[in-house]
Length: 458
Image 1 (tube, one colour):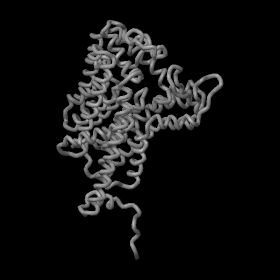
Image 2: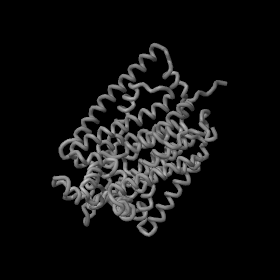
Image 3: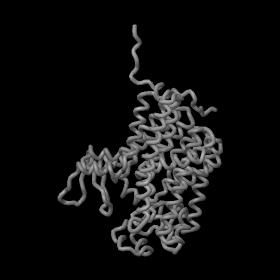
Image 4: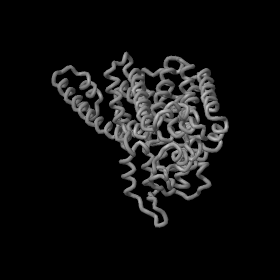
């Protein structure tokens, strides 16, 4: 009886990759050459776009402007948490700021300390210096990722190729366009991961403490440290967080720091918790029962609620956040693998933030790398490989392309100048949430049959 052949056989893929046959070598050479030509042309357009964002009026469309204004206010002895349009009028001479954000900045007190030296430069100079710093953070992060992926000394040309490749991904070049701190947080996350692998609890705690102080990003990683019983790392992270805020108190005064945590943070969260570009799990309850509301001072569209019961929004968001933390913790614990569990908690950290901007997807490069390596070890099983391919495709979608597509299904209400989008169509704005969920389950199932899993008991 003839043996039925599978239509999908991963062995063929591996034979092509490792084949020394001359025809296969030529085919691989052509494919790799085409890839690098495409990469170079795409990089040219990306850097042209980014360099234009560093010039003329474009430099005032950056999130970095908030950081600069806050730092300038501290240097000049002004309350940094005045409304941003007031700070802009004081420190930047431009008519652009008449319609600038009429609320205080959501940036944490210690994040101001990070950029404080740039307040002694002009804004134009500071933008360029921060851009260089972002590239540096991304490059070092890529080096740390490659070091784990390759498991041997990483050559310089691989770092250049790896950095060039990730800069073509929308979360990275969009983050560079806005001048945000996600590249720094990515570097800290990569540092946390390496410190955990090399059993360095003090460094683990220091990097996590800085991440918490800068963006309060990564607090679910404390649960990961609880699972692996890294008590010293948890203690150090708390102490570093406190120390960073004490530096902020010494620099800008106790009243400003208290005002941020007691007034500014909750106020800004209430403005942006349901905005369409926020893909946090915390936003889901508000989206379902209140709708997604874009502030008048920002471009964008509103999304209709599924049920207009505003009183349930808070409780639903709490429930979704609890389910996320519970599911992530259970899967990470059952995976019984250090790298897989860390990747899961990176995804959970991204989704658990009250406001998760699109450039936070930059952090997902860590779980993507972990998933890819583990599936490659497992000979690229069909279902998981297909799901990972879909995830990568979603990851490479530029946000502007997605939102322009969604806007085609909207309509204008006669009483407002905002575009209104139906609830079902508005769910498309949560594609980054879908990416994170795919990665969480891909990571978990990748560990189950992986023969080289690293046990917590190792």
